[in-house]
Length: 337
View (cartoon, rainbow, N blue to C red):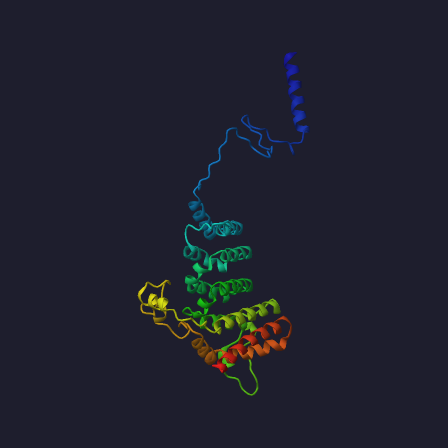
């Protein structure tokens, strides 16, 4: 009797297992299963103490400077530059590494792929003291000319903004340092498509330039080209600006002879220990030398390009008129002398 009842129960159990579909049935959970599906807005730990790894402001500044250069994420580089800008803009400014070290680290970011990083970099440069930027102009221009010849139009435009800042902070040093005059004009030639060899070969048929598709000229409308011409005009105005007359001071005269110079490289124009320079890399410390080499190599090309830009009208025409005033002022000064 008991054996028959047991067999019936087993058959019923097998029939129920056969009738129940196995699909969609959850897998049995292990005995040591822990539910982690919950979400907590905050975790509170009693008697918790937060200790910063870089409690020293100097070490924190250096760490953020390293993040600005080496971080892979764009937002990390941008935030690190913002921190450095706040430190440099504070009163008194916090700069434990010095302006030369900051420029050496951050100048490669002129060609950074992120627009927000380049914008924040310009804000940081504006926070630097101009007196500490002037001795570093030659190094800055080396990276700046690379940015002006970059394939990306956005990077070239942002580099122009940096050049505009540098002309305000150290304009005289920009046009007089080694390579600051002719090499910068060569960079403007690449951006605008104004070839000096073409400009010097003007014939009765008029002036022709290389097609803009073969150069690094603008592709985003006339506003970019107008901006390029405006910065070029500013550059020429500073280069052709007459030197201020220095009133004779007997004490300053003898100090200049016997005291130590107050600039890092007072005999740079002699190039005593450097590599021999070509015409483009030479220093043109005074207005007369800059005007002489400009008339020989660049005046015809820039004047012809300016006339072509004036015929376009609009923002480009107004920028060309500003460039015309810069060239006309130089011609009047040369005629007066």
